[in-house]
Image (tube, rainbow, N blue to C red; front, side, top):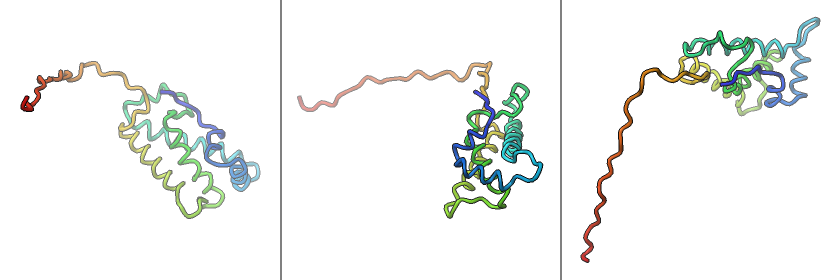
Length: 148
């Protein structure tokens, strides 16, 4: 499975460019590095910590700053509320709560990864053969005598 480096372009699939620029300028202090880039690093490291808890995933073969491509949705669901909450202290999403619900789902996905319930990496086939596959038995089909 491919591992990717999440970028600002990925974030722009969930938030509008002007919205992201507004959060960036509101959170940016004097002589401070780009807050969006630092949040990307924080969320990627956070996700990698969960994923590394599964012994089936060999993190030593994964480039730093990458996450599984299958986890991009979780990355976005976590980082959007994180970026929004940094300058304002609250997530702006109206009355439906969809962004916070999505973050909760992303956290469940990460917990499942940590418990090896989700394959985020290619797992080699088992060395021992599995159970034998049963052969179907088909009985001879009989038709009822319809009085003919």
